[in-house]
Image (cartoon, rainbow, N blue to C red):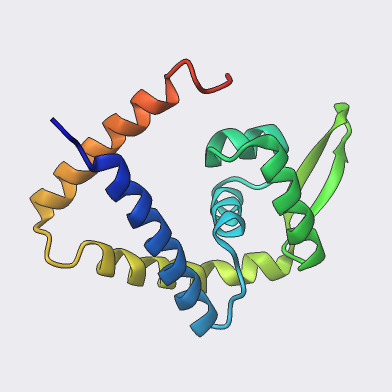
Length: 146
């Protein structure tokens, strides 16, 4: 049996990212997908290491480092040496990034409405359960460095 789930997920992700970035731009926020994921995590809990951000976003550590560099340049975050472990950097939000949270969340709600358009509440829950199972399987696979 030929399955197309992975293909559909890839297409959905590409379209989601393009539409979401466009909505952000229309709302005056120049934030890339990776930057948005990192901001979202830091809005939940500020002052994280690169490793913690990598784990929470599923982005590779080197990718997180590169994205963080761009975010420092844009004034979204600051990077400081961890006083408890001088080999680690601690990433924290700037006041500017904190001020974007309400606007970003409004765009995120707009994207969710579009994403689930035509779905019943039951179908939304069911889809999210299936996606959570796929995510768990992939996260626990031997192909992911832990």
